[in-house]
Each structure stands twice: as C-alpha cells, then as structure tokens.
View 1 (cartoon, helix red, strand yellow):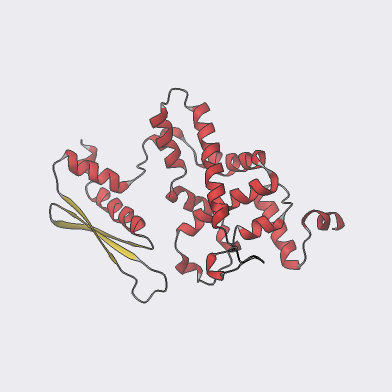
View 2 (view 1 turned 120 degrees about the horizontal axis):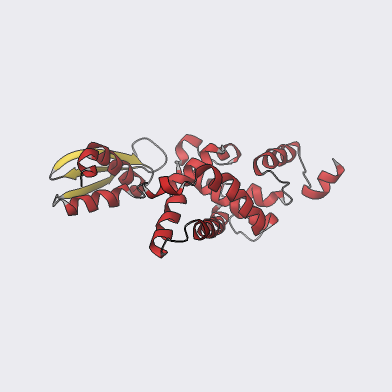
Length: 245
C-alpha cells in the first residue's frame, strides 16, 4: 500500500476505489489520478482552478478525439492498403462516429464515474462518447501515446472494427435519405423545432416529410441527433425500395 501511495497519492478511500476501478478498466496502473478525475467532471458542476479556469472533461475530450483519430487512421492505413484517401476517411468516420463512441462508452459503463449536477438520465446520450474521448486524453497525459494506442486497440479495434461490416454501414442516415430523394426525384423536408417540454435539458424534434407526406419523427437533445433518428426511421420505412436501386 505504501508503494501505491507513492504512485497515485490517494488521499481518500474514494480515491483508492477509483484507482482500482480504473486499473481494472485500463489493464494498467494509472499514475496521475487527477487527469482521470477531470475526465469525468461535467461542466454543470462549474468547478474552477485557482486561476478561475474551468475544470471539466471538455479539453480532454478534444485531445482524446485527436489521438483516437490518429490511431484509427494508422490502423486503416495498414489494414486497407488498396483504399484511397476518400475510402480511408469514410471508414475512419464510421469507426469514430458519435453513435459508435456512445456505444463504446456505454459498454464500458463509464457513466458510473461521472460527477454532475444533472441527473444522468437527462444529460443526453452523447455523454458516453464524450467521456470515452476524455478518458483517452487522460491516458495520453498520464502514460503517453503507446498506452493510448494499446487501450484503443484493445477496447475499440479488436471488439468493434470489422472492415467488411463497416463498408456496408450507413454513416449518416440523413445524408443517405437526401441522396436517395435526389436520385428518385422525390421532395424531402426536415422540419425541426424545440421540444423541451418540462425537461431541464433542451430537446429538439424533427419531422421528415417525403413528397409532402409525414413519414417519421425523431426527438433528442440536439437537432442533429433528432434528424438522424428521424432519418433512420425513414430509411426503415423505405428500405425495400432503397435496396432495389
């Protein structure tokens, strides 16, 4: 235990529990716990340092996003030697899409570490992907690029990246619907409006019309998310026609 204290300097029992939970998740020993703590602080806490600078996961999220993208790009470059720049870019976008990252964060149950003044059910689904990226950023600051590379390979590439399946995956349902409508000479409309109701967090609803007919509706914590949700429902409504093209 003395050796542990020299490495991570846990000041409380909570710190020690956090350390062991992290170690089990990461499969290596975290050294500087303060980076990881920051990775799970939501801005709703309005925490600041001695200089008044905000303390939350958002800067780490930015850093982790860049590192994650570079590791995935390197993997695709090696595994798809015949892929051109457009193909590689598209495949990387599918791997690190918001939907994919949210699933990663959910599967790892990262939400259990988040400290926030907002009820977890009202934060929004993107929190899962955001804190996954923030965690990658924390790993980089704590242990460097090689540890990030191994973590991403173990937690992202091995369990989730199947190039053949990714090739057939639709990265943007809205874009797919628009392209389909243009090819088939159909008129489309994405009508959006704020739909917060009695909830604290802002919500948006989007209704999709095809040739003037209401086809589907989506509701989420962002306009883009609601559009994708509604567009996905349109896709399933017209899936047979789309597949025949």
